[in-house]
Amino acid sequence: MNQPMKRRTFLKGAAGTAAASALGFPYISARGADTLVVNSYGGSFEKFMRSEIIPPFEAKTGIKTTLDINLGKGWLANLRAAGPENPPYDVLMTNETWASVERGEGFFEPIPDGAVPNMEHLWPIAKLKDNWGVIGTLSPLGLTYRTDHVDPPPEAWEDLWTREDFRGRTGMYTITNSAGYMFVLMTARTFFGSEYEVDKAIDKIKELRPFNQVDFGGTMETVLNRGEVIVAPLDFASTARLKVKGSKLNIAAPREGMFMWEQVFNVLKGSKKKELGYQWIDYILEPETQQKWVENYYWSPVNKNVEVTGELKDLVPIHGEKMNQIVLWDWKTANQNRDHVIERWNKEMR
Image 1: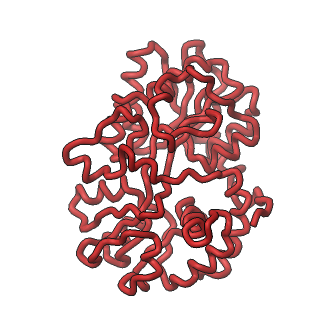
Image 2 (image 1 turned 60 degrees about the vertical axis):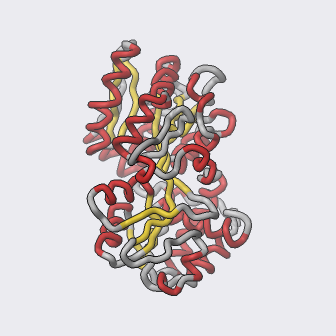
């Protein structure tokens, strides 16, 4: 069903985040003519950006780069406070679930043909329709399972319904996590032929109860490591990181396809430095930069010219032609159903 999405549900707390953003990460109004303003998440991601990504870009192009550290809601709040004609960023990196909202509010514009040469070398999953942004990094989500409890490995999302050894030992995300909502979309697509059959999907997922619901990916990692669940949706990059540390986990790519956590790079319509922004995006997509994401974060490379070799093949199993198994949702339509899905889920999945 398609019901108008209530802003207060999807964007709950955005106004408050704007205030927090103003305290911790000030709105950027004064920028030098040679300074490009982009964004980043904090923590280890910020450290990696400042040490491994930005210095080579500045050395190569001579473009000074300023980072704004925040999260999706904070970036949206800052954009709305500034307005489409005077954005605080030149290029914005964010999940497509947020980018679709910002795109609809007129903050972005398409990337002109030829402006970002490396876009010609991307897997189809990384290309947004009509060049409305480009996916620069991604981690597929499939089924992660405990190798000491699950034999044989799962092969399909459908296995969650048919295998008795998974009953009561399956992990699930809460519906406010994007992975939780994407699981609803995948269930609708798998069993009912369309990701928008969300009511039928919720009824189908109810058949899996009881299951362990968690709020974030880090929590899912914990319950899998403890053996509280033996199978769950988890992004493959997180699974790889845990495997390197000795966890008894492995990855299964369901035959119906995978969804993903992605970062979409968008050009701001009101930016005065679009040419610099195109260079930034091209740099993010070039093979040398993509290789850094593979080696340090175990993300699947979006550039076809990146080879995953050696032990990385086991840690980054989704690469090459397998990238075509990943689903890119139409978030503009999916978000119209989201408020309804959240309401039903919270009432019926306790």
